[in-house]
Image 1 (cartoon, rainbow, N blue to C red):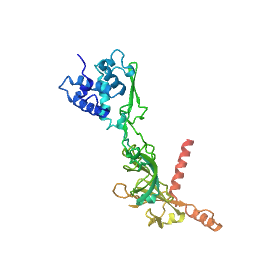
Image 2 (tube, rainbow, N blue to C red):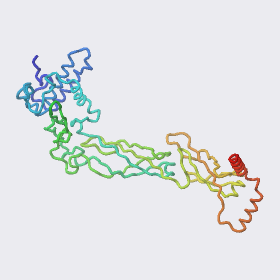
Image 3 (cartoon, rainbow, N blue to C red):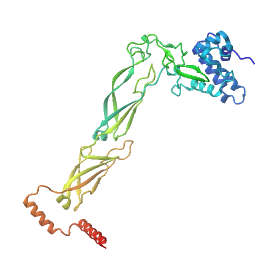
Length: 381
């Protein structure tokens, strides 16, 4: 059975350019895809036929050979390195489907190698590390940051060409951004050397950006830091990343928060811990002390009589605010009974007298040494 003319299969004239061929192919491929024609057993062959026609006509060298010799250009070795499309007209369905997937869905998948789909490339996402104090994390703040990034070129409005002139289709790859060469039984696909995979070329590149459509520049951005952030919190600013290539959409800017260590407070989630040294006498006798709070205020705390080092007292609601709503954390006061140093002779004398009078006032020490004695006795046994 004689093969149909490739132009007839696609429904275009011989004068159709690359864009017309592509549009016709997309339309036919959607109509004839086997998944949409499960009740039509002949759709798969028609689908292969359309793919084979497009494979030839989108390639400038193959198209020229076909226009001159017809189907005979790919029979018996004619056509040079172009290879024969579709393995004798039957076509490889997996290959055909892969090509159609690239052409039909590449726009939504980020452009899997098709240069025409890379004309306007999305800009890269950027990361900015921002250090804040614990007080700033507690109250939140508005902060201005300077971000070195790529922004759209104003001279060409991101087009990359002088005067904003539209780029032209690359003649080497017919706008596909890739070229194919036959090596034995394999078809090797590589990035088009003329347009570097873009599918388009700019005859008069913009002098300001060199044809990229974007330039390097520092940007000042005002960032809202919400109350309650902690180390590792990520803030996303949509569209504030690197400008896209040749008018493509900008990426996003991600701000990663790092909360600096505080000289007084240690943080654990929403809770704060403050270690407060007290004198040995104050720990023994009890009393009131004033402690700082993260909001800059003061709170009076009562020390119970006979408090030991490490004892904790809770101040409810005096911790950090919740980042996404909810009650604030608590603040814990941890006592550290301090041993006096640089004693005078009088102080030493009084402490010796106190030691003699307080043999029954140290229950923890008494319990410890009883345990030690029992351990030694067991070892002797």
